[in-house]
Amino acid sequence: MRILEHTFEEYLKIVKSFHGYEAPGVVIGGLMVDAAVRNLANDIPYNAICETQSCLPDAIQILTPCTIGNGWLKIIYSGRYAMALYDKSNGEGVRVFLDAEKVEPWKEIKAWYLKLKSKSEQDSGEILREIKDAGDSILSIQHVCIKPHIAMKKHKGKIALCPKCREAYPSDSGDICTACQGETPYL
Amino acid sequence: MRILEHTFEEYLKIVKSFHGYEAPGVVIGGLMVDAAVRNLANDIPYNAICETQSCLPDAIQILTPCTIGNGWLKIIYSGRYAMALYDKSNGEGVRVFLDAEKVEPWKEIKAWYLKLKSKSEQDSGEILREIKDAGDSILSIQHVCIKPHIAMKKHKGKIALCPKCREAYPSDSGDICTACQGETPYL
Figure 1 (tube, rainbow over the protein chains, first blue to last red):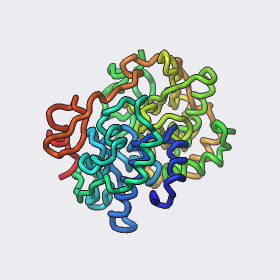
Figure 2 (figure 1 turned 90 degrees about the vertical axis):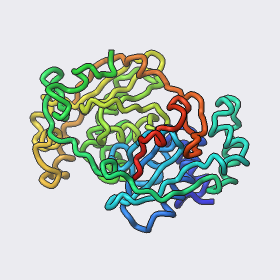
Figure 3 (figure 1 turned 90 degrees about the horizontal axis):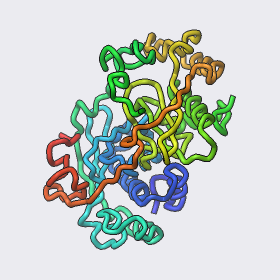
Figure 4 (figure 1 turned 120 degrees about the vertical axis):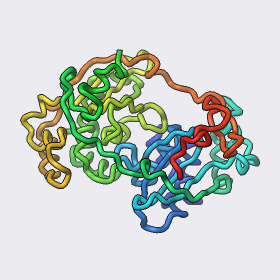
């Protein structure tokens, strides 16, 4: 089994290096990205949507040109374990999701997916073995079209200096930056 | 000049590989992460906050163990070009921001930062030269303490099968998943 140009074992190493450990979600995410890329027309410049912030964004960032920082990957939260790659020019693309029905025969994957076991009860070696054996048989694919306002590149607009903190911020936020308006993560 | 364990030129190559191109924001972000790490106590397990989704998250993901997918990096939007690393155990940390006053002498960095020139008018080679020359002289550092509800690890809670789409989702979202409630990115 390959995950794009990587062997399964090579991919595990990259996951460990980027994500910190061989998280089942990032490993299954690799299968999902691989399936999405194979089902997109060749050589289309694409963007990505990820429906969860857990694990899956890292598989997309590892395997595709799409990252959070370059804006080609957006997290549009539904909490479902699903992602889509779509043609930048028209929003048409492929959605891949981990299919609960297809996961049914895979005891450890199912326990991880539906959180039937706590992390400490999970056997991570066994989950990885099941993922390797299951391959893309646990995934389903849909053709989708992304809503234009989501597919569209957003521009920051003009930049102003906040009169309160003296830092630059997008002037669309108001007369002072949102942090000075109170939405700050700091005490 | 070094960016953590990398030479400036090595870092540019990693940026190009991960982010797609040598974006000034990711390069300055490298200086910011380097400054933050150097100003944190040694060997503290840390998390990251990024105040913008543009470019800077990628510098954090490239240079630290913190990624969007492993949850150690959170984007708390203020639109300011700033990030913080903080001790996971008590929320105390270091915030680094691009200081508009200190950027003043650097013509190209200033034009990029305050969007005084369009992308096509910017001279990317000259911006990179200025960034290399300026180094951390354009940054300022603050000691911060992260609000506990932001520093805290969030748990997804229980997982349910959505009776409508038949996909797994966090049951906190309601009787059906948020996508089936209408918040879907797809047409």
